[in-house]
Image 1: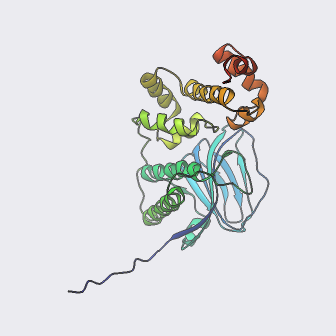
Image 2 (image 1 turned 60 degrees about the horizontal axis):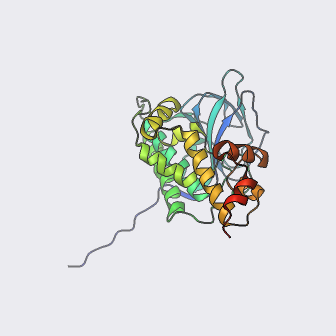
Image 3 (image 1 turned 90 degrees about the horizontal axis):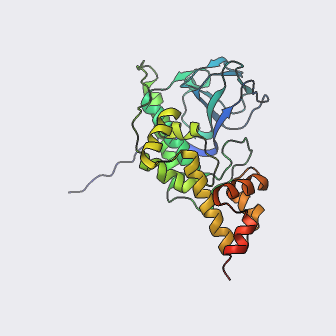
Length: 284
């Protein structure tokens, strides 16, 4: 018997990624009118956002998404009464239906989770900063195996689900409040050098800030911010003892706001300045 192999077709395909951003816009924040040669996904996970474009002008509320087509002029404005948390992903693709270019889509719970997976995978692919607009996001030098392919697959799954659900009105569900704290700990162990907000963590792991902070402290006995701070200090202590890196280089690598803040934070945690610590503990 001779088996016949069937070729699988791609109805929709991601061909490239420009950026994966997670922004927490201040009230009254506004972008310049801009355009670029790729699609741009704009999703609001908290608050509301005014959108002005050639195809649509209006307000995106929580859980709303819109896609700007390539070379479409558009701008974003965070409303005065309500600051916005926004996911922006720039991408190129084949097979995206025209319905996306002027339609606001309210995401189902399952698709919010899938988008959160894409944001998480985007951090594996791209080096920080993730919350600052840049024209050329750099890839991580040491990427997790398969991270680029996982980002592509996750986004394709996300869009295929939306396309299938376009004519179906789904009852929106709230984020579940139960999640695996060990997964968050593992994630922070890997990403502690980067600037990660509680809002982004809550979005990625499908909960809200209050629940995340409460459950994390119940499980670990410490806060998320203290946990990340302690990880940074332990790393800083190793670098001060075992390398010739300057204190400025260490503070930059660990994403402190300034060398002054790093010195102050280090002394608060250890009782010594970085200079005093190196003098006492530097390996001969």
